[in-house]
Image 1 (cartoon, rainbow, N blue to C red):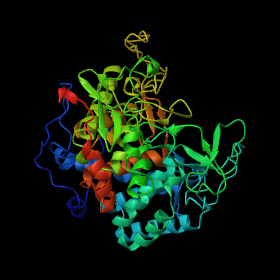
Image 2 (image 1 turned 90 degrees about the vertical axis):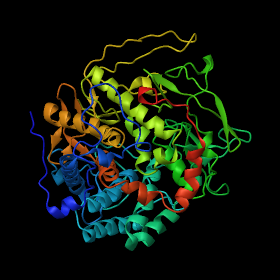
Image 3 (image 1 turned 135 degrees about the vertical axis):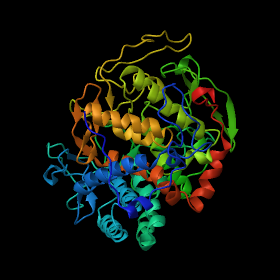
Image 4 (image 1 turned 45 degrees about the horizontal axis):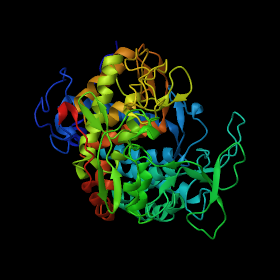
Length: 534
């Protein structure tokens, strides 16, 4: 059993932490299977922690920051994609991505705001990173960055250490996270506003947006990204150039991002806020797939009605889990649901949509995990048995053979009305695979449950190391002893919002961003039903 870590903080550091409403604000650990209302309608998460809890979470942030620091090359300000559990710099992965770089930038801000590093150190770190980015090779017409760079030099990588050749790809969602980081930096560090704004201004998300994806007068969808050269017959691609129809062909992924509740909506938010795609594109995305036997491949038969927003008919479908109803993600993973919410205050702006949906999604993960394994938190992560895998709560995602929550790959199937018989309605789950970053993302909506779950993973399963929580752990204690900069960035961002009074929300959602996005989210009622039938 690991002893619970208790931070010994100086008076100055404690002064940075929000004051507790009371020693037992928000109640104790629950055991009745219910969950409170969302932060938009009740006590904010920071008021539900007492002083000891806040010190405890701050220590987790300090250790998590140690892993981010170890992953980052001081000369370039670029973090490696991952590092071994002992934080040896020799074990840095040798490659990084736009998402990783963005994660480091917003983590630096959180570390500064929590008093883990000084303002001058944060400024210097981010200045180096932005300077490196300004000189890195990228797709100049769109201003977008490629997927893989050497974190030690900032050079584009042509080949992985394994010998695998890299076909240079420009990812929609990866550039979305990097742009979100620039939008945070410009407001969080005024001395770097010009540098961050210049990098943001060069990025044109219209290059990803296919206005004719749905045909007719309907707004379009984003593609997954593009290659600048033909990737060959082994990779499905569609030649076009949405950003500059008169320019050279780009080779787009054959798939589009057509689902709202996915991590990919960050690129939609950024593009709408920047005025590069129409606001109607938000309502073009599926809440669920339509109902009917033609769509019986999806996980559940949705229930809902059609509403009209900005002239777009939207099927407001929902899935069910016990008494709750919610707009599902694609795979049932926590980061799909909540990573965009690190930046866009979805629950505050969408009181009839996200403010109900997010708590329902969190509660679904809690109940599934507690019932099946005694722990919860399912999201793509390292596989403790080797490699990387997408994990989630199968019944909470649209993909019918989608993300699973255990080593055995147990697939639940409750059927689809009269169109598909239930193949496995009462599954027997095996050995669960939990990732701590999922519990941190949930902390905003279930603070005490997240704290209890994380303590249990650290103490019972040995999931804690010198750089904070390791990337994943099985319910029988097999640990993926490494750290990923993306996942550690989610941890830091979540703590920044919980302990820092919505820090990333406040930095991201200002001015035109709020003026453009808030009215979109305010319009819609998902028809969701939260925990306890609320």
